[in-house]
View 1 (cartoon, rainbow, N blue to C red):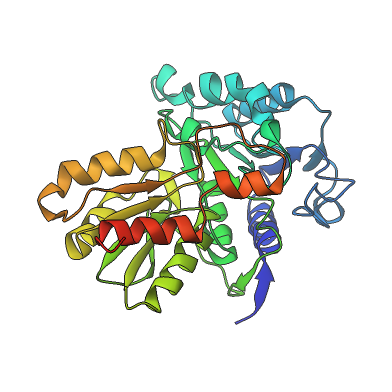
View 2: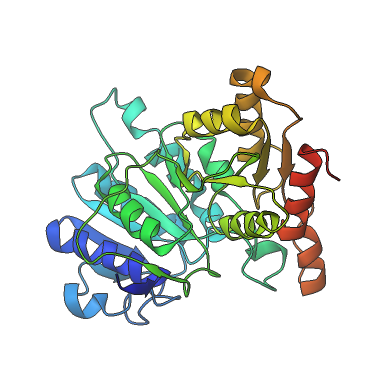
Length: 326
């Protein structure tokens, strides 16, 4: 099977869906003439033309609103934020318009729109360009939130998101666009809301999503050398969450560590920890441990970034603690 970059997998998903459905268009900053800030949309202007690959001013509220209006009138927009940090300018349109349209219209209007772009730390971008907003959006009824961790999942999940009749927040990472992975040439769709067991194990469950899957899998690989067999689950979407996959795994391993880049308060790891203690309490042999970013704005200095973000050593330490081997 061929290997392609994360950005190429996203591009293929959009190209295939746009060839299939003429109502789909891509809009955002630098998506057309510049081929995308991260070259995700490279070559798409030449294929689809300026009416379907649309450059915008630096005006997120404006072009997000145009997208919501287009979705309400029968089109299927893909709105690219250069970073979800900039989506704060457009959050009124995302939450008060897109997410609530179906409910407030009594089911008369859907809003089939995808808001996509990178989230989280991308290295030395400091506090205002390094935040994780996926848990913010996952707190909103009416939205679906997808966070893929590899090129294969990215393509299948983006195609599912574009076809979905609900608004979807699709979170990527600047640090993953160049990652390569096996992606089949034929069409495939990955349903939103199904987690994936990336590694089976029996001693402890490690749950994560997005680029933190690299940390989870890296920790599991190191733990294997010490005879600790970790099961690693990739949530893939955090609204909806595949609670059953996590609970069933914990019933097998009896221990849980959750790795998440977001700050600890009100995080997805908080929700999962609650759900597991509610539905698998009698199976837990140790308290659930979360490995989150330190509760501070992310600094610029790389040494301080390393101290604040989750990493493999922190995850290994957490696993050994739930196994009472620390």
